[in-house]
Structure formats: C-alpha cells, structure tokens
Image (cartoon, rainbow, N blue to C red; front, side):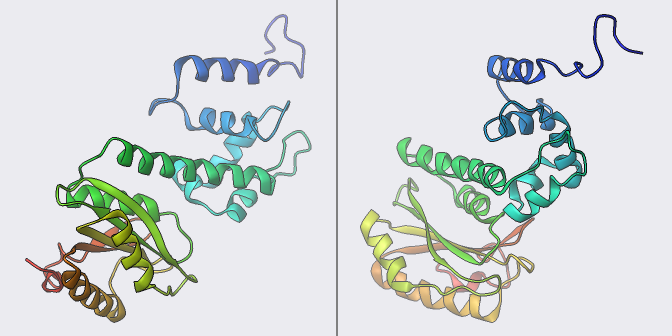
Length: 247
C-alpha cells in the first residue's frame, strides 16, 4: 500500500540527503549497515543518483561481505555492479578504483599513525600489521617492517613485487631501507595470492640467507610471515621452521 501523500516514484526522494546527514552526524562504526556505508562511498563518484539499490546488488554479489568487497579487484567490483535495470547506475572503472583507494588510504593512515605516535609493537602485532598490508594484494609482493631495539615502529615498506606466482626480492633495496631508518629488528612478509600460506623451499632458503646477512649487520630478523588471502603463517612460530632464526 502506498503511503498517503507519497506519489509513485518519489519513495526515495531525498534519500541521499538523509543518508549523508545520518552518517556524517552519527559517524560510522561496526553497527552501521554495510549497504549504507557503501552508499556513502558511491556518492562521491556517482552524483545525483540513488545508489541504494546498487549498494545492495554489489554487496549481494560478495555474499554481503563488506571485507570481500574491499579486497576485490577493480574488475571484480565492476562485474558485481552489473544490472539490466536502466534506473540503477553502473559501477565504472573510476568508481571501482575509488573504492580500492579507500582501503589504500586506510593502510596509509595505519602506517602514518604508528610512526607519528612512536607505536611499540610485539612480534605478533607486527605480523598482524603486515598481514593487513598484504591480505588483498593480487600479485606477489614483499614487505619489510622495521623497528628499533625498543620495538618502536620505524617503517613498513614494499621492497618487491612480481607476478601472481613469483616475486623478485632485491636484497640491496632491503639493506638500504634498514640502514636508512636505522632499524635493528625487522620482519619480512610476502604473500601467496593464488596459494596457501605455506612456505616453499625458496622461501626457506631466502629466510636463512637473510638471517645470516642481517646478523652480520647487527640486525635481528624477528620473523618471516607467509600470507594468503584468509590467513598467514609465522615461520618463527612454526616448530618445523623456527630453526631458521636466532634464539
């Protein structure tokens, strides 16, 4: 039954304004419905159109998982927004790229905050930090997290990137970064975007070589973590592989 005073087609009149006012007034937290968060994100690249239906369509495509949406590729986000309806806007490459950049902004903020506040990290916290850096990366990449003797965060940098199945690690770049920030403790992390979080023989070999080289520099390799999309493995915490590290 149509609400009295409402004309057909005007049900969503003023909806964008209401969503904007609600979320900018109350803020966004874990209790905010995912479709409203996505709606607000879409406002910035899809002007003057109702994005409510589109937000539901995109989230349905990802099983109503906001995290899977944010970790998806630009191509997957575009595909998720496809619809035959002429009344529902489409997801363009520009819009999909904007969504991906929001996650990059969040990662940049996390690193900046850790550095500016001289954040002190346990080895587990540092490993979790690296996992968040790599969990949505679609090609193999290597990150180096640097700390001082007091476990204060100094830097977290990408030092290598390759294809979906292999990455070339530049030892020179790694050592330059360590020297530049004055690190005395480091964690190495790389991902297996198409596989499981399990070390290959090459992963074990390079861990052993780097540990020996870093020890000669007076730098301690705290851990090497292997990241898959949904999990990570700490080589130091693995009884089978912790022989690779100094005690």
